[in-house]
Image (cartoon, helix red, strand yellow):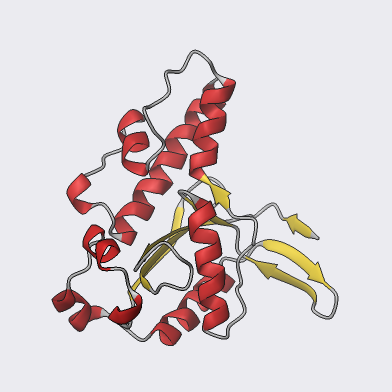
Length: 203
């Protein structure tokens, strides 16, 4: 059972990974916690150390990954998992109850293409041996956009629903050269959601 209170927060999240399969490493995570009115509360970003043998080189080339930068800034995955868990718990406003656990709270997560980020994040927490303090039903800005264009036939849909395409469609600044950096992408996702919400409210 889940219940959201009046002070519900949203936590937007973006992952950069070493491949599309959930057993691949996460190489960067960023998250932004906001109020229900989308006022920014806190930002989390971390680059992770990983075993390059488990990463797809083609995926690494698409990301903002450079060996030199990761050598300077990356931290152990378990350390990052612990800090992200604490971040999510600070912004956990969705009440859950489960047999054997009683009542507890988890964070309401939002991602662009949550069908990818959600399972990846859940599998990663499981590998780290930690409880995942996020709602398994992650909200998705791709689906938000699909519904928006489905409901309002006067709107001209974009050619696809990629983050960059939707940002340009709704006037959100987006630099393709900075894409696939988790913090850049999650900031764009928050603003995209804001624009779509405003448009939906104005209809």
